Image 1 (cartoon, protein in one colour):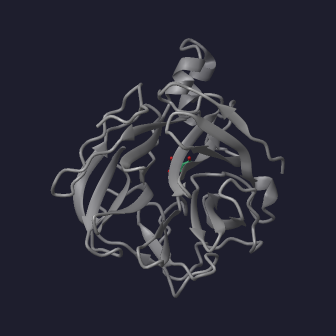
Image 2 (cartoon, helix red, strand yellow):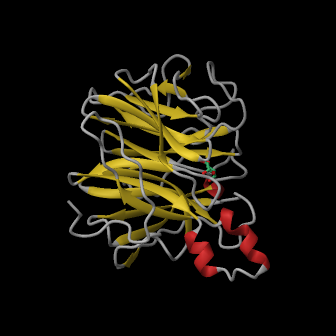
Length: 307
Ligand code: FUB
């Protein structure tokens, strides 16, 4: 695997990465730096046939660094296709990259650095359709790793049902069997879990929008609240929510970069839904803890941040 680092400076704008197509952004903060772990849509994609994962970072939300390929399907002995939506967690000076492949498996890879390169320590999937308790009504995809205030980590994933396992301290195995989380009305895919002022939020793609629900317990049951992001122009809708330097951010993807790059009268224009681009907006809570609707902008976020 080749490791390289490209630094580039841009004004605040959406999409935030313009030199390659990206989707499914999982945003994480490690050591005062914000990292984005997205999928990487191929330039000539005509389906979701992605092959590798890049990692991006920023310290100011405007200037981003692409750290290159952090993991590729070629690095995995057991996976064949579809390098879809990943996420990254941390424990004891190591970074754990969780990723779906083949629409059937969730794997894990480990690195000493948040930018990788990541190495598969298991030489097999971590979770499959045979994992006890897993509900795999269709695809087994979209892992989200959540670490609670007590240091315990959990992996959420799934399509049509939200599944969860509690991870062991090694972060590459889990306790007992998977559980299905109740109360995620309209759930389709792309689960994301975060905590704000002691309450748990589970947000996800459903009905073409990003929906969310709240609970006082991580494993629910959750109370459905409704949409926070309307439909996007790429068909698939996938997001993450993160706090960074005192502000809350909402990452998502759309097809704006492809719409800009590909002539509308060309044959290739019909493939824009598979050439997606990551965007970011501010996220605001109401006093009662509910989340305000996100507005998709071309400007994105700025430095210094809006108050
Ligand atoms: O990027 C491939 C798939 O599209 C993801 O796994 C889903 O969440 C959707 O965004």
